[in-house]
Amino acid sequence: MAGKTAVITGAGSGLGKALARLCASQGCNVVIADIDMDHAREVAEGIVADGGAALAVHTDVADRDSVNALAQACYDRFRGCDYLINNAGIAIYKPLVDTSEEDWNRVIGVNLLGIANGISAFMPRMTAAQTSGHIVNIASMAGLLPLEGFGIYVATKFAVVGLSEVLAKELDSTRISVTVACPGWIATAIQPTDPDAPQPSFPPELSRVIAPGEAARIILDAMLAKRLHAPTHPEWRDTVAARSETVVEAFER
Image (tube, rainbow, N blue to C red):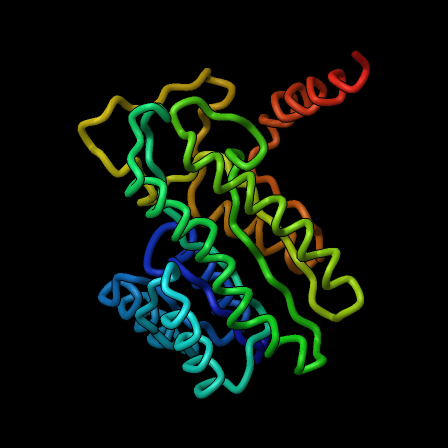
């Protein structure tokens, strides 16, 4: 990764921050994109203080013009992008019957359109360079399982998994690879947006929380190995398999 450039959205905190620091530790130039410029600048300054190269860019991933400006800033500063990590995300925890149009627009705008905007802004430039590259889309275990109370979030993350699998097929003849990461619980700032709402609960076997740095390492290893899928919590395997089996069984009826 030394001398290459990574763009990471939502990199001002949590998993994105951990990914940025990890990429920088491997000698990568890092573009820190976040809607909170203070956080983005703090992460970038920390990387530079450690001897790395970083650029903080205020970015609203739900705004295509903002993401296009991010791409331009990246290419102006580092002359290319080797790794695009679409990480920005938000969650809402409430029953679907209680969700508003504003809830839907906000979560879809960040979690799904944010990734679409990233692909639109960077992929043409990356493929035109005719060099190897990689796009990582951060989905969730909620992209593989219907987690009750997270209806809008689940809808967007299922979409991200499907979008990523299609993107991998469409880029098969290029030198750009795709990974879709499906983390379980991570100790990050992505929390249900209403602090007064009931909090989710899950069985102990599905409740383990890992540090952002641990998740970042798993995701980066999958990216460098060019693996399409990158789950972070192996204990979720049987639950995911059971859900998939119910779909398979439906074909036999």
